[in-house]
Image (tube, rainbow, N blue to C red; front, side, top):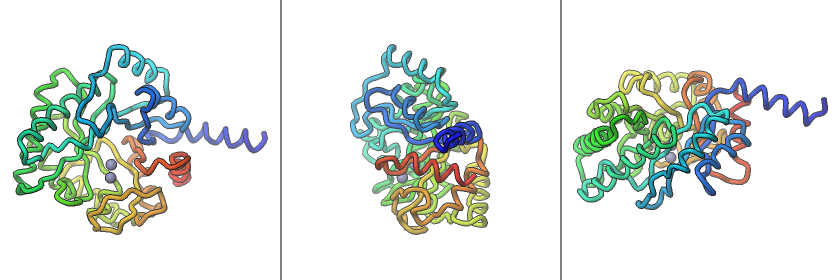
Length: 293
Ligand SMILES: [Zn+2]
Ligand SMILES: [Zn+2]
């Protein structure tokens, strides 16, 4: 075998060993294009935006789109795929119109997940702005209850993500996510752990002791059984900075050890990169992650 063949062979082996490791895939040119990218990268999970995430307006998924996507899903090696909801959504908003609009948009997100066999829609809890944080958390939970009620017979989950706590954003403290999940009171609500957000919020996962303490905290508040997805991002900003800036794996303030521990501890949880899409950085970041196992 020449070098090229050996490398190809190693990639194939890694592909079969590495479980549930992927990236946020692009859907330019069609939602099903995500499967081409997944194949190219040799990944078995991914996250997508199911709509233009910078606009409120979003067409529902057409029957054709749904069929094409599901067929591509079936013939792919992807085991689980999920959506990230639009960043415009603020389920904590103190503005009634914006809150209603956000709730409606979240219902549509969950409906699109259902049409595409996506397991869940990940959403940031939102920003409290002028509201007291506890009241804002109740608003988020109320919105989620409405979404659940409006989508019966839909198995797609609503997954709330931890945040860096920039500005007045909620969800920087695991207890806040736990409270939202508790108040939402449905099996269809779970949580996503973002490594960069956790670190920026002050959870020091960069070494083993801190990593263990962080997940012990998660377990005591949210519960490990509620961990549905992990976002793998290094952090450009220091511990506790409350500023959300994603860095390439090993190039930030978190460092590789946290990612080694994450991969080792959570083989069964889908883990995706949300690092800047520069040149072939997804390939490079995946290579770094695979080398850690
Ligand atoms: Zn994230
Ligand atoms: Zn982020």
